[in-house]
Image (cartoon, rainbow, N blue to C red; front, side):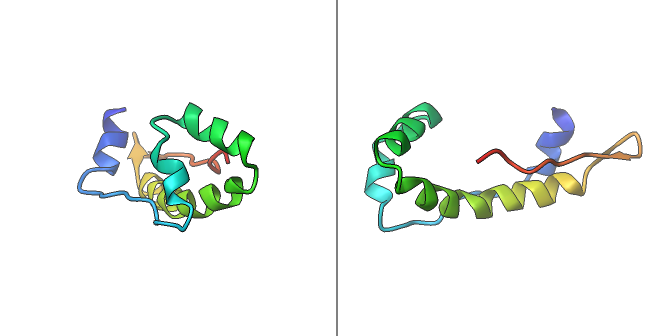
Length: 79
């Protein structure tokens, strides 16, 4: 985990703001976001489009890391 923390050092992450942002503001956890998406399925595409750039930044930073000359594997994030 220490190596992953080094990979995220000096990295600021923020989701893109959307027109449906008010529906996600009341959510304080991923469980609440999943519940909101279950209640309103059209929010799933909105959530994926706002979180995808953040996931890409984290993936790119982790791909640069190595541990004992072995590069980290970075699978596709779960949607």
